[in-house]
Amino acid sequence: MSVILDLPFSVCTWISAAVATVYTLMGGLYSVAYTDVIQLVLIFTGLWVCVPFVLTNPSTLDISQTLMNNTLHAPWIGQPEMKNIWIMIDNFLFFALGSLGFQALHQRTLSASSTTTAKITSFISAFVVFTFGIPSVLLGAAAASTDWNQTTYGSPSPYERGEAAMILPITLQLSPPFISIIGIGCVAAAAMSSADSALLSASSVFTANIYKNILRPQASDREIQWAIRFSVMVMGLVGTLLTSLKNSILMFWFIGNEATFIIIFPQLLCVIFFNISNGYGAVMGMLTGLIIRGLSGDPIIGLEPVIHFPGCTLEDGVYVQYSPVRTISMLSSIAAILLFSYLASVLFNKGVLPEKWDVFKVKAQHSPVPLSPVGGAIEEKENEEMNSYN
Image 1 (tube, rainbow, N blue to C red):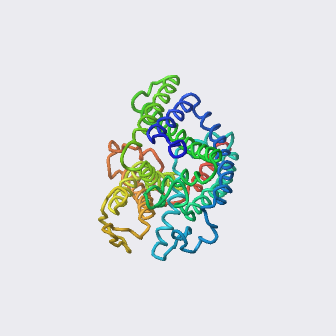
Image 2: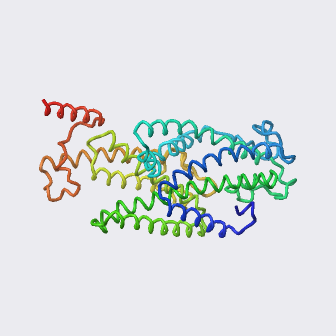
Image 3: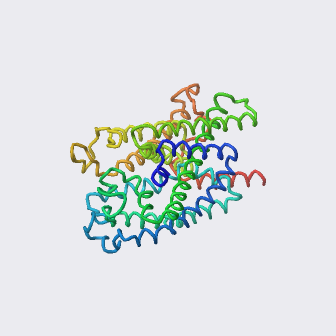
């Protein structure tokens, strides 16, 4: 909106945030679900409408020629090197598995009409998401194949100006004005889809886990509804204020995703597939994952690494970890959850530690058994129920 309509970035941000907050506040999950469907259609069709106009712009070369050739800019496909192989694997696991811990994902699966519908929707989405990425790849390739000297944008290129994050709306300017408006509508739809999901997820988590369980356990259903609405407004205001910081909002997005990948995903995995998991393991797994990730360093927030994994090198005054540090932190968290869960279960069930110290009530759970998938526990429970009926 800021690029196409030539409005101040702060004004566009507040307008978009206000719209997303209002319809999320009024409609709740229904508004999020229905607008997601509409936005999904707009994103897919709108970007495909823009692609032919951008690719046929006189300032844009044939993307097949710039695929591997250093014509105007570096080849748009990139130059993967063997030293980056572990980083690529780390990024793949980060994006593929990290999203499994998102509250927005389970919000949609749990609201499905049946378990079968939730499964089918999830499986279809896993394949369709690649199709939705094709227009963005083509537009990015067009941007890397454009002689910006021949455009109203001028030189240097957006990448050289440090505006790579705005490359999609900038590239849409290569199409006719009415087409670019359609494209920016698609970008706004994508932003709204993410914003309303984040608002509803954050407010639901706060209301259910903090307000209902800690602050007001006796709260009525109507009070809970008003608490969610108030939380949506607060979350929308706080999230919008964060965009005024010097650091990019994408930094907060990556930090949040890393926290999900390192903390929530291991807990989700263990609680579903390992019946030995308990609260003590969850706490220790969280601390272990965070400590290892923090000691590994992060150039995004200017954190120097303390642990130098194999391949860690100093480049332009910044240490770069070529090992999959996020995956290592995630696996360490899983190992810590299982180990400390088993130790806590043994210590409390054997009477080594007094029961009054058992904050998470491990004593009330089953006695420790060898680490095994939950499927075996489910079958055992079903057999016990059948015997009780007999």
